[in-house]
Length: 101
Image: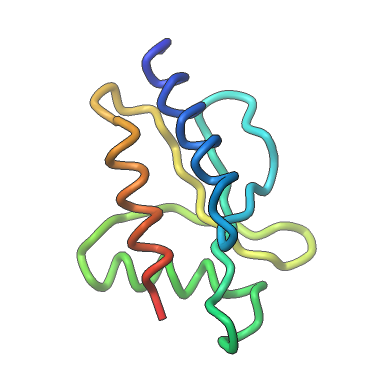
């Protein structure tokens, strides 16, 4: 799993450079939890990640899991467990997430 840890670390570094992506918590292993913040003027941030998740699924771009914090904030749960997962794939999914309007 050393390769997947590298993918996780690259993903974390990239997420931290994106103003509309917010890391929910530092991952303990291969589960990266990211809130997607809405573009300016859109619906409240708390539910935006669920809208993004649904749109990615509807558009047949990606099937991403999600969850909700105790405070009601939805976020994407990226589980980086497949051995062929690479940073480019994860970055593409998050880029599509940022394009949802």
